[in-house]
Length: 311
View 1 (cartoon, rainbow, N blue to C red):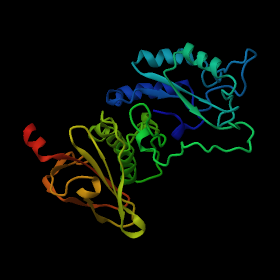
View 2 (view 1 turned 135 degrees about the horizontal axis):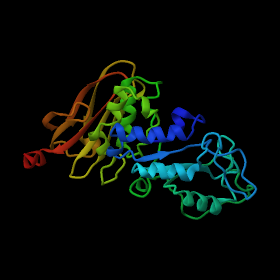
View 3 (view 1 turned 90 degrees about the horizontal axis):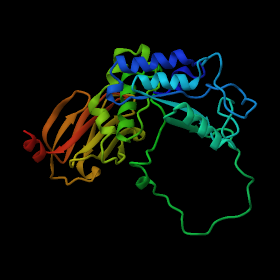
View 4 (view 1 turned 135 degrees about the vertical axis):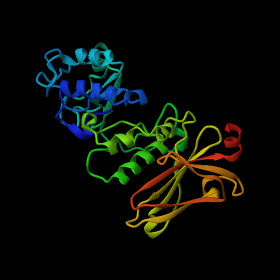
């Protein structure tokens, strides 16, 4: 969980404590949502006379160390925010030229996670020079995986700006991309729909699959390319596919085996991860489904032989 998307700068130690409690009472922590991350605006506008960051005395009167102890007592972990520039994005002190001291301070508080932003990082003066060595590369997929996850930012699920189907699509695509699942809503006051999305264990399992290969867009067609097929490999010779309708009307979207990189004659079972049921026990060549406007349906393909073996 991260405080920014919903609370912005309106944070304090009570919000953090209540959020930690809510992660436990709702069962979210048991599903792996075990980080409580404080974003920007936690510190005073300036460093103290010793050059150290100081927690906002009104918002965090007990200090960050006491808050970390509280969060740890709940079996959770506490994260904090800093910036590689002179200031944070909200013009609090950044860590530029204070990196070692700030890291030491965070460690002394018991911080488990650091979000490190890049605002007000002016860099160095440009030079009139260029490299000619052969290190250019336009293919970066190999660098996404265990040890280096692509992070498209915190989840907006439950923050009120999209429909249920759009939030479900958002969560599905994040999981397929193996993105960090960082809740960004007020978990103390979730709707049943928001809770249903965030606790879908089958979709979470896709995100957390140990193979760690990020899915990708494999086929685009329809008006302005708004019918999209995304896919990626999972452990056990399985594949995850997502049929995403970005058009304004419902549509039938088809995933061709060849587009995914599978043999067209291969037989796969198809499990719907939102319905929690098999929608086909033996599909060959392709799979098609009716997808509502702005919705995304996500499935797991498993070799038919593996289903028989499990049975």
